Amino acid sequence: MTTTTTPAKLLQGWLRRQLLGEAADWLEGQAATLNGAQTDRGFFLAISLVHRRIGKADLDLSAADIAEAETARPGWRPAGWSLDQAARVFLLLMAGGAPAQFAERLEQLFVTADVGELIAFYRGLPLYPDQPRYVERAAEGVRTNMRAVFEAVAHNNPYPVEQFSEHRWNQMVVKALFIGSSLHPIQGLERRWNPDLMRMLCDYAHERWAAGRPVSYELWRGVGPHADGAAIADLARVLDIGGAVERQAAGLALSASSSAEAAAALDGDPGLAAAVRGGDISWDTLAAKHLSPS
Amino acid sequence: MAYIDPHIHMLARTTTDYEAMAAAGIVAIIEPAFWIGQPRTAVGTYIDYLSTLVGFERFRAAQFGIRHYCSIGLNSKEANNERLAEEVMEILPRFLLKEGVVAVGEIGYDEQTPAEDKYFRAQLELAKELNMLVQIHTPHRDKKRGTLRSMEVCLEHKLPPDRVIVDHNNEETVEDVLSRGFWAAFTIYPRTKMGNERMVEIVRQYGSDQIFINSSADWGVSDPLAVPKTAQLMRDRGIAENHIKKVTYDNALEAFAAGGQMKESDWLSPPAIDQRTLFEGNSVLRDGQEPRIDEKRSAKEKMLIE
Image 1 (cartoon, chains in turn cyan, blue):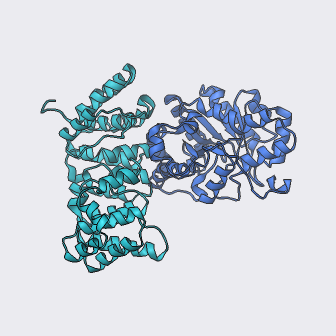
Image 2 (tube, rainbow over the protein chains, first blue to last red):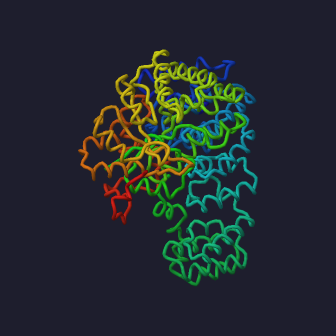
Image 3 (cartoon, rainbow over the protein chains, first blue to last red):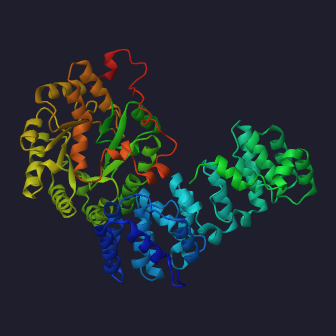
């Protein structure tokens, strides 16, 4: 690995390794031809042609590849990408142009994107030049009703934690629960918990309880760090009435609070308290057991 | 029994329809771009409409385990608004190459005006340039002449007949379409197009080569189960199963697969990335369960669309 490794070079290397000669030649030919080209038409057509030329097989990445991605762009996790997604982002990076032109073209692509393109373009967010330009676009991705598109922004993507205001961040986290998605793949959760979000999550839990609907155990993760008296009462209630997973989650949440009240509530279940404080249970172990990999 | 409905406007339909379609065995659908009942006044709304066809509507269908494809084009009614038509022609190429766009369509004639003719021809040229199939809407009025003219213009522009689907046929047009080698699609649509008892007789008379059926269900009084219901009616009236399969599945698949954007494996074994993203949560069709059209169907009359 050299210090000059860039996401575009990594994508190029991975694609070249996996694609048949003709497809790889087409892709690199397009990147070379379009780089610096003044017309948008060829650029738009090339991006749309990718699925026909490249296909949609999974991008095969090793642990070493993932580590290289992390080095080239901290937080970038291309695990679970497909070939067409990688190729589209590669073309964008190679031939999108200078930041202003890049942003304009990308917005044009978004406006007429198909589902697969939407997912690819949002997954590529952390790689685009002049990052703050894309905050509004990313927020639009959070507003979608298409779960896979929402997750392209929210999951395994460093963009929201780096660029979203607290308000936008809170909306995204609550929406993840609301649409039945998961919190665990969201990057930077621990850094961004805040009292407002804690209150929104507790309100949401009450709403679900009132409707007789289940509450995702992950919700409690955002309640613990800033739990006030009412929130600690909610967590104590989960300890009382929750199923096994919910109780473990409530225990973890209580242990994340610095208040004596929370510690006392957790001490009410000595076995759980020991498991939580001893590290036998963590949000990672719960996710590994109870969430499907995304 | 699995069915394809190769012409249906799902944008105007409900999730109840999707559920019923999936339960009845419909595995794949094609949504041609068309008029939305109200004339569009700006290219922006056209862009949003086409984006919905390749975006949200595809996602919606996938939630019910149904594969959604579309055809993209400037319809004949709106071709008469020339200012709009010019702008739409500018943006069409950007949509035609999207994933799952199986044809340029539905295009053709409505009132057979000079403007309709101009944009029909321009889009045939676009289909040639991008090596795409063509899905033709034949007019309601002056149908026979309009159908013949549509085919003549296709041939004039050197489009091979087997890459052109001529839709909304009836007893008066079927022979001309078949004898010229075009695909002949029939729309089972209450009152204005074909009833399905008539369709049974057409298959009895002409067999099942080059022929397939669709619902064209839209915002009007129409039936998204027209394909499975007609299949059942054919079965009840003694049409052989292989003919039924050809007109409700095989032929539509063969006709549209030629464009390279639709293949059986799309719904029998979708790519891993699609299973992870688009098809999660619903496997109505993947359990080999017996499809049903109407659980409480007692009378054969329930299958009739008149």
